[in-house]
Image (tube, rainbow, N blue to C red; front, side, top):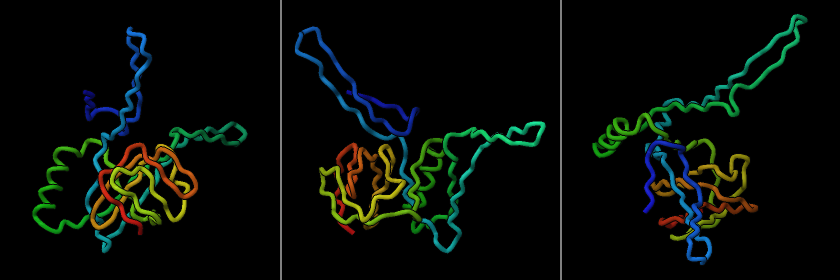
Length: 178
């Protein structure tokens, strides 16, 4: 068995190769998974939904006044701020439990202002879905969130071919078009 701990990178996607002295070749074991928790709560759209990007740049200035700028981060830090709707006691218990047990770990937050529509469904056991358009944020290695009828599921993009997204693992859920 393979055991992964919660400490470490958010995404697990690796292959272990085993070679035995029996001379029967090499066996591969692909291991995929996520250490991140998917944020399950819907924003309260009556309140602001804010997305901020923080850049960190060092500005070097010469005696003549010319400037050279150097990025101190490879990618900007993104923060999201919004209030959520807690509709019942079960959701309140879930919120309190997640805030107690998981607040210091990695979350996957659906960015609900960016989305595409699935133009083909994905059956249980499937790993490819068609989308209305391939956008710049759909890249290999990106985590995307599928949402339909109050169901949420995160998937790691393995490849993009035209308007088809292939994921690193198959789903156990039926995802309809639309």
